[in-house]
Length: 264
Image (tube, helix red, strand yellow):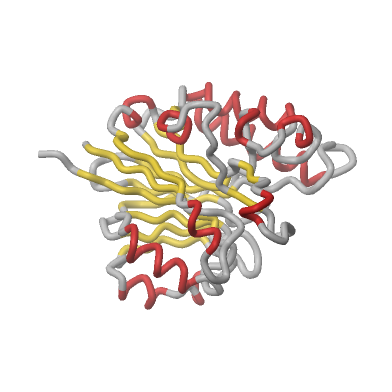
């Protein structure tokens, strides 16, 4: 018997402020699991009732007041959980679970890294690179089939940004970040599901700045959000979609959700 599993990931930029569009997305897309980043809420104030009413009765949280925060809400049971401190300062940037079929699902929010791509001038940039390096060390030891999702805050390919030339010195697309992400990907032979289904140079943005007066007209997007899978898991991926339309909804996040469907 084939088991279908639909997993979504979304940097929501405050889950309480945007709970209406989260609810709309869940009603329209009906993923089995939704991984959220940048929830910006302590666990005690998470909007449990809204998710429970929509059938997402399994919820695991790693929250933080005003900043960061990740959560996994699900219609299927979530077994055990981890909260790894890849930032090395107790920021709430990771939560991982085991699914009933034995797979691991890891939800991560990589630091943005500030504005200056120089670790000496900008400690936040150094913290971001160190975060990815710690993830790489973890990834090297993985033996369990795993799905890794979240806001990586790095757009790795030239076609993952609206202008490769203009963004080469802009944090999220600098050569040092791209190289760090490539080492992470190689450490477990992760399959980038977005580019598996939309090969380069196909357009595949997930983020548009709030600074643009008309984000759609200027279309200065970047692919900062990703879904990766262990090679043995990626073989079961049957569909992948970036829900760009959500960027135009009322009170939108600057990121849009990704959805991958698996058939096991």
